[in-house]
Amino acid sequence: MLGSEVKSLRQHKVSMGDAYVLESGMELWVHNLHISEYNRSSYKNHSPLRVRKLLLRRREINKIAGSVKASGITVVPRLVYFNERGLAKVRIALVKARSYMTSERLLKLGSGSGRKAVL
Image 1 (cartoon, rainbow, N blue to C red):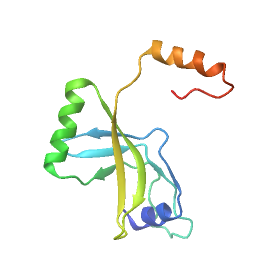
Image 2 (tube, rainbow, N blue to C red):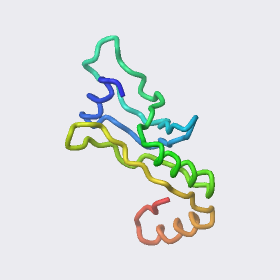
Image 3 (tube, one colour):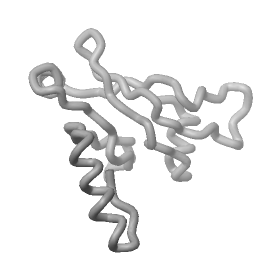
C-alpha cells in the first residue's frame, strides 16, 4: 500500500460499496476498493481504484480459494482498520448470494414496516 493511501485511510476516506476479492496466481487481490486521493499529496498520488494485493499466509489463501471454487462463494472486504501496531488491515468475509425469490420476499416483508429491506 502506498503512503498516500495510508494517509487517506487515516482520514476515513474509503468506500467499499462495490469492492470484491479475486484470486489470481495464488494471490488475493482487492478490486474496486475506492481510497480517495490524499489532498496534501504532490504529483506522486495514487489511483483511487487501483487493484491492491492482500497479504495472507499460503494456508489461508488455499482455504479461501478452495471454498470459493467449491461452493460458489464470493469474498468481499467488510472493514478496513488499523491494528494496535498501526498497520492497515482488511477484514474479509465469505458470502453467498441470495436467490431472486429470497430477495423478493424480503422486499415484501420490509415494505410493511416502513423501513428499507436489507438485500
